[in-house]
Amino acid sequence: MTQWSNKSPPEWQDYINKEVKVSADEKKDYQGWLVTVDPVSASIVLANFQEEQKTLIRVIMGHAVQEVQVVNEADEETKDRLAHLFTPRETTSSYSKEDLEKRS
Image 1 (cartoon, rainbow, N blue to C red):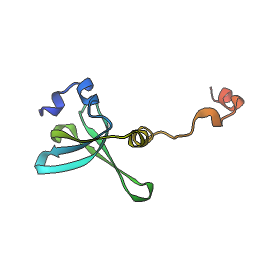
Image 2 (cartoon, helix red, strand yellow):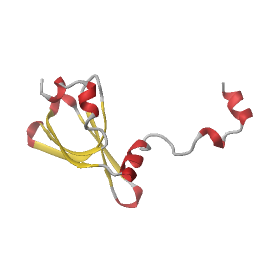
Image 3 (cartoon, rainbow, N blue to C red):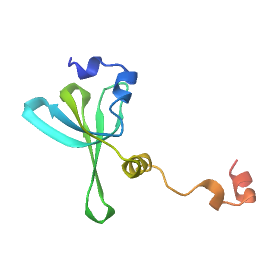
Image 4 (cartoon, helix red, strand yellow):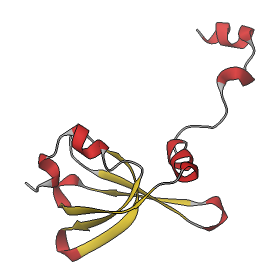
């Protein structure tokens, strides 16, 4: 077991919304914005924003993680992009009250 796997969820929380460099097994390094950490497997989800509004998502399995280093802090725009990666920006206000009542 690696040191990363031994951390607790509150310790992992300190890495959320930060650009990190992850050293993994087989001397592979990955860099990206840390979106979340799976609390069971300690797997890391990284996001890299690319051209034309595309985003590359990479999952590094927790057992392979050797070291995680913080490279950069996110600004407010980056935090907003990370927060909305897997959720729509629209709110339920686009549905009428009747539509919402039918769904419940």
